[in-house]
Image 1 (cartoon, rainbow, N blue to C red):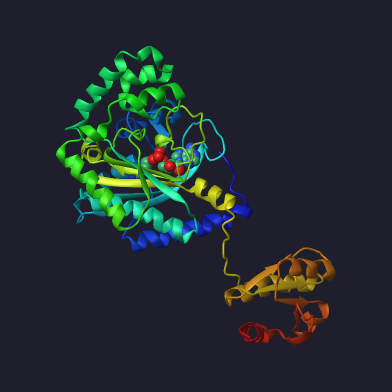
Image 2: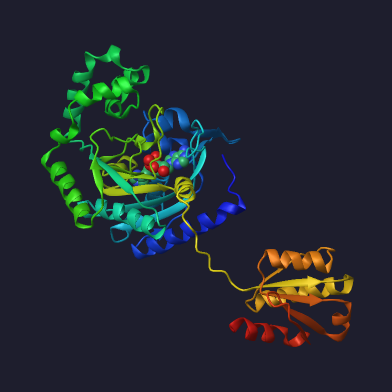
Length: 424
Ligand code: HAM
């Protein structure tokens, strides 16, 4: 788990602002869920045979005996909130977004943290392919706003309960005779979750996967058309994508479309699961999950969504030296000399701030020289100097930092005077 230091905060502020604006523009409303949920929610929702549930949950038992888990992802928590709070009674589709930390007990490395942060988007109650494409479009709108270039979508369809069982059978048949050639993880997957055989990062397993039957050839008519439509919508909005028949993602709820967005030329990381020999830096991942709401006790409701890994977006912005344009407001630095002035300056600071001025001050026992130095470092346009004499005269000195010109004005008029000068 890592700290987010002051130097990085401008990146986070910018990203959060872009996400907030885009969410509103695309019709999403914000929903915040608690960080802790009952463990069973994720076991059921994310899926018992996934890496997240098998290895990565932070789970604790409370004094009352409840078993709780720090959310490893948003999706099941959002669906629980949707069902519990009557959102299922609203006109559909319901568009929900969330921003916050997720927790996965993973091997930490650059871009992979035990506490990371996601912006998560879900569209509930819409089965049309246009929705899948719009989610991807939303990601690209964000990357454009943040000046991130050369990103590509990897996309696949993993079918539905109508066509997947037959494909699964075919896949197991194909792998049965080659079990001994697989890594130990994949030998286990063959029993538990055979689709995950396709996204193993071990070279020997990848070589075998290349010969395996591909689900795209086994999709039922409905899934085939749906996928074709998603791709046509992406073509329409000029979003660059690559078909990746090995992309299955490691969460159990997906049906039909699955996708990840990566910087061009990088390896995908299939829902953060699998062996991790290669650099894995998907910036976002998601897909359709038409069966999850019913599985969690709701009505049969189609849905799709995705999550953006915000820590990775920050890393990429820094790597690519993306500049953050910060609107700098003209700064006023308040200098005080002597006990009397210090007493007065606390009140004055608050008055200036309330008048809408951006004020800074050191409030320590510093000399005028060191306080002026701080004002210079902060690139303040004006310093206000309040000494013993000024307090007694009820005046204050305004010093223009660049020219060095200073003038004494009545204390009661300082706000008006500053505002006048700042307008120039
Ligand atoms: P996910 O692929 O597990 O999907 O995570 C989405 C993104 O979160 C990843 O592409 C990555 O950028 C980021 N991420 C995940 N784990 C870490 C980590 N340990 N360190 C840094 N970044 C990480 C989901 O979570 C699904 N709930 C997405 C979704 C929403 N599907 C449908 N709706």
